Every structure is written in C-alpha cells, then in structure tokens.
Length: 116
Length: 115
Image (tube, rainbow over all chains, first blue to last red; front, top):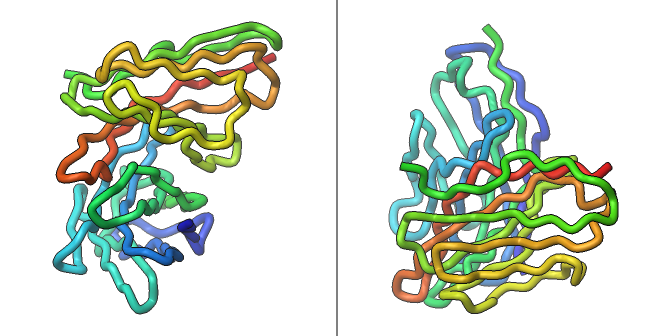
C-alpha cells in the first residue's frame, strides 16, 4: 500500500514570491505521482504528473515539480505566485508499472494563500 | 464541452432518504471512479468501474451502490442516508492505455448535506 504526506497544511505567501509545497510518499513499488489543484467550491484540476523519464515535470499555470526517488519526494514549485493561485493543492500517488487499476491515494492537502 | 459532469451539484436531504448522484464523461474513457471528500478535505476512493465492470470496491457501507449502465456513465445510489454521509462526492474518469489508467480527470463534485 502507498501513502502520501503533505508536510504543510497551510502556506501563506506574498504575491510574486516563490513557493514550494512539499509532498512525500511511501510505497514498496514504483509509483506515478500527481498534483491536483482545487479552487474554492470547484472540482479537482490536474496540474502535472510524473509517470517516467525526466524527473522535472512542468505543468499548467507555471508550476513544476521534481521527482526525487531517493528522498521519496515530489515537491511542487512556482517561482512567482499570483493572487489567482490561492487554492488547495493535493499530491496523489498511484501504483506504477504495467498494470494499474488507477487507485489514487491523496495527501491531506495544502492550502496556499497568496497575499497582495 | 464539459468533460466530466455530475448532477446534481448540490443535494440537501433528510436522514433516512435514498438519493442518487449521476456522472457522465464525454472523453471516451473506459474507467470511472467515485471519490468522497470529507469535511476535512480528505479525499478517498470509493469505487471504480472499467467497461461496466467493478474493479475497485473500497470499504464502503453497502448502503452505497454504484451502477454503470455504460462506460460513459457511473451513478451512485445511497440508501438510508446518514449524517456522516455529508461530504463532497467526486466522479473521475481515465483511459486504460497499455494496461495503465493513471491519469484521472475529475468532475465538479456533488455537495451532499444530510440533515
């Protein structure tokens, strides 16, 4: 079984500052990793994903994340945030490899609040 | 051009009632899911169907019964609603490619409040 830990429940930051949202996972098998964003009263939108290949993945809205297998981490970063990035961010993991039932395990979420 | 849609968006009902939530996707995906997001925003998978076949069935009370009439639709029926069923229910879908079906696209959610 896999699990996901998002180390910060809330991250306040000023507009145009850089931000990093931390995510660590545990799994005995290879995994696929995802970041989703949830704006207030809305559904989940896929930001980016790591399946294989380059460990640095770029997503929408200027976000990127780096897969670090040795540290079992998949931290999300943005060099300069906007007010509109205020939302809750979820890290998720699913079993990798050739057969996947697609069972996503989510972290507890990190609320990013961008202040003017 | 809605990809994954759910109805209703909001549902307020009394304890003991039976209700259904519907989900439809027009992405051509073959796998659909139901997730529950509780009051603390924790998301947990409930069920998954692939081509109308149940493939994931987590520990969920049997008051919850999913039904997939075809691979574009996955409905969730809840009998004898309880206060603890109040949550946001998300539908998602993905496409199995070379045995993998990892990238899931979510609907807008159905906010259920049981009084």
